[in-house]
Picture 1: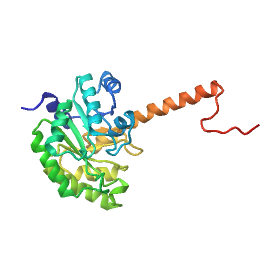
Picture 2 (picture 1 turned 90 degrees about the vertical axis):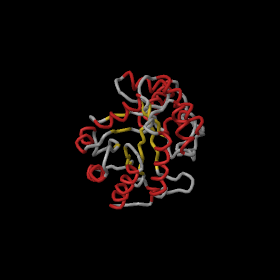
Picture 3 (picture 1 turned 30 degrees about the vertical axis):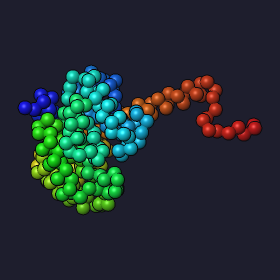
Picture 4 (picture 1 turned 120 degrees about the vertical axis):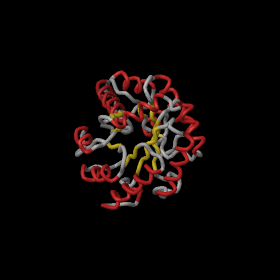
Length: 258
């Protein structure tokens, strides 16, 4: 029997656009819920940054999952986790750790953080199938497709074609949703939505506001570390104002003798 929160999260992919402003700790997650959003999604870059690490699986996975567990305990809504590429964990262990942390969904990307580039599509599909077999219906799997990111090696129209090919494979393997990250145009995203059966995750951008995403048929939209970075930028601006008011020198500046 599926966890009720997993059932709810899966159902939310088949209604109006599911908006997921990503959180990184208990306070940000509680604010997301307080503002009426029905799901808390984490951002690996934001969580890693708050823990003092860089993104890209450079943070110890136990620290990342401990942060997830604190978030899941703090909020009453479903929590879906940016699990990067799975930290090299075997499918059974990855599923067990996610469920133990209280997550009912996860992103899994097809970037190979160790070898560089992308994991071969068939191998990634096999991994997703193994994770689905281990999780049953207890996790909502969002399969991230990284063909639009520069390290993928794809360019031009081949990025879209490969995203569609991978999206179909990942859906056949059991992914509930696919996430072609890095798409900046409505034309490219529309092709992926039309070419891949089932829910697609998008991002906002210059051409892609929420209304456009909804019109394209996108099922969910997430924001990655955007809110975390906005918060840090606001703090930096405040500190710069405070420094000026206090008559402090610019950090790192050397006295000129004048």
